[in-house]
Length: 215
Image (cartoon, rainbow, N blue to C red; front, side, top):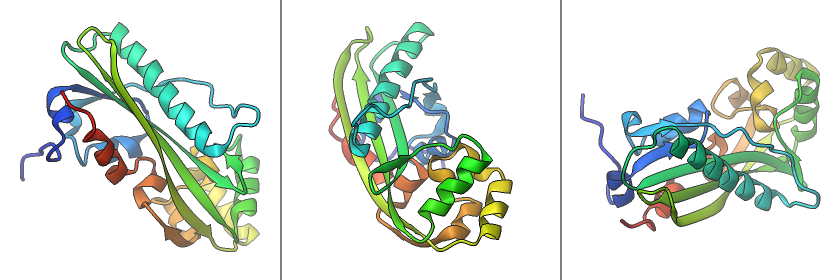
């Protein structure tokens, strides 16, 4: 087996300790495609994900990504972050149809409602992602954030299909009540744009952002 290496020309990943501010196993697996899993730590940020009055979807996911990065940074610094520069990566993904934000369902009935509303339509999936670079003392050196957009078309679904999918339990902790890489793959008629954005961490845009950070 070939030795796992860091993605080329990402100087900041070579020189900084790295934190992923997410408990998502999907984001952890995606980050491990450019950085070996033993080279980064995971700390999830417990934040209020409510939408602010009048807040648009792109502003919403960008705000949550920045907030997750900030909160996880503080936890890390207070719990033995290593010496030297530190890099924090955070992301938030949501589903949007006609500027209505579909977060995680409250339960099976709410998941079924979301699927009924999304079925037969094309919606967008937004991932806001943020990167913070801290110095040895934990002071902020640089921060960048962006939003990646993809389109997803869910085919018309029967009540039996919706009931089956909800009963699997898969949609109950997912934005929009589905996941593209699991059993939910059977629901789609089209996906346009960055696939990994839909999974939860757009790799190519993240790589492009990481190249901005220099040490």
